[in-house]
Length: 411
Image 1 (cartoon, rainbow, N blue to C red):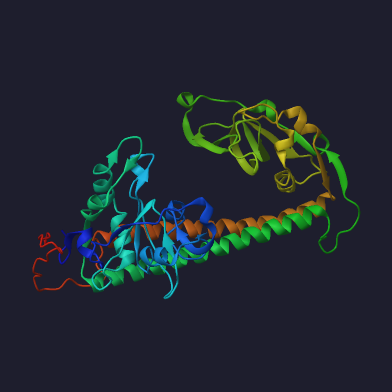
Image 2: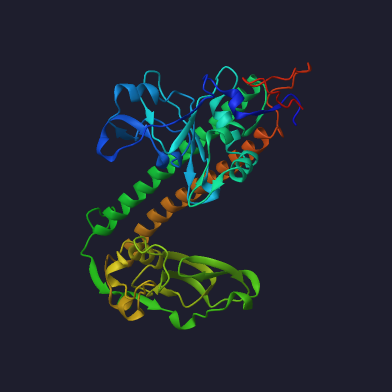
């Protein structure tokens, strides 16, 4: 055990005389849609912490609102799951004073004593590998995996002194705030790009210095097709290398050699994971493409290849697909699809604007992923005592007891 930390049972941290555990109100469908916000199982997985905004409404009686009231800092656990690994998933509530919120019978509430434990810190400890291992191994498995309050109460929690808990929670909260800010900025940049594409490809917004009518062409008159050079290779036969090996949904591997070299547009032929956002990507350099993606390039003097990629990404392909469980975009159908486009110089200008936006989005995405990794590393170190934000006290702490008098570990 980390110096100055103690292992305690969750129930010992209760702020209520009943051990802090309580089941919620039975949520009748006929009473939904009006009344007080209600925490249900779906809200448990929507991110931490849970807040009052966006919760489903439930017409609770005055007595139910009192008995099943939610307070700032309350923890919640899922009480059943179709798979053992999903049992006792933990989240916590962060709300305003005077806010009326209730919780339904599919979750168990634990009310901590905030004079001894920081709710955010406790939530993270109850979500740790150590706690998850205990909860999953002690759950009841039948048609559904369930957990009772007594088992939850015995969940082990590694508890540092309150000042250290606060320091850990503050550091992770700052990291969370940065992640959220970057996520919002990234969403804004993507929305701006989407709006710019709609305007630019509709012809309603023309770039300065360009005029004239746009021309509609069948794709076979605007692009060259390079499908004949594709070559599928079974995974067991691929020779490891530096060349990206592309399938319908992007890079699957890195291999030696190449099937194509230059600037291309790849479009899924069959096996696309998302038909509503059909896989279209612009690539450069040496690539290896299997037979699940079409390979195109802009016709010299007619079509800018990067512009072609952006234009093709605007199409809804679902009406052009054939087949059942594995929808397919036939090459013959693709060749006859129509594109409306300006002259090649205006195409290049449009592509350059969108490429700059993509570069900004790419850099922001990389920054967000790095921030998430740093946050995960911070949490791992802080929650296990690998990094100490508060120096451990020199005095030896006496063992505490639970409300029932049971001694707790003090290592």
